[in-house]
Image (cartoon, rainbow, N blue to C red):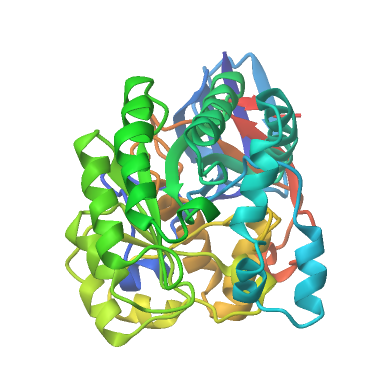
Length: 413
């Protein structure tokens, strides 16, 4: 079906096919066309340009008048834990009462709390809970996302999570990439036998995941009290042997050398980065690894924000993602992420939109098909309500400025 969108006040993030990410000073540039039209052919972008140049013989089956509104690519959320059971609202109250994230984890809360709930919940119920979250974020403008496992911490639990992710991918038009994060924490029974759990990941989990094609990426939480750099490297090496692409949680609370380990194994992304040293930034230079900031995690936990200005000033790229999870970021709202990046991390609106679209797509390995208004890319779009400029998107942080979301050319209701 051919869909024509006319009278677009501003068509945002117009790119040539050759642009797969933007870095450094390029992040401050956001190409747009004012008073534009956009043609969609089935699930792809077919044409666009100025209204005055619009061909007369388009003959669309559907026409959308976007007068006063703006159109931009749907958000690409490259870091979520959207599949989980229940919630951790009691831990939210515990933090209000003075306990830190680490103290809660040491009492059996945190990731281990979520793992207990997940292993006690049926696969069908986990799917039903997760699809509600997925539908919500799609209505909020997310057109592609990565979902991690990591709340199973058993062979059955991890495989159950990955099957739910696969089912969501099969049942919804949104692009979903699965990451295997069995190395999220050590289960209590392996607290004093780290190698035993790593062997379980390598010898039992990974073969099943590879055989059933349940994941694209392998991820590790490289952090003090979780997985050491040496343990992280052992797991990444094994994942690569099974055909998985490395990603890595690093520098959330401490800088212990995880960034260098990620770069060593050609990780697609290094995520969190709330605590950064100058040597971490230097290590990222001349690598293809994308730094990913998770500002709503910093907001929720009250921890430092990623040093975005330092990264960008060093010529590096930056992506933004939600970290949607029950413990440290119970929200998948990318609009809030974009606003928070501007308000707290001092990104310009141009930088934040680039980080949440084209660079977010790169951080999922899909920037050839997503993340910009480019002929041949997926027709995943946000149509705003009438707004004065795209600055209003991060400025009006408490308002829903989305009029419609199109996923693969169809309005998602």
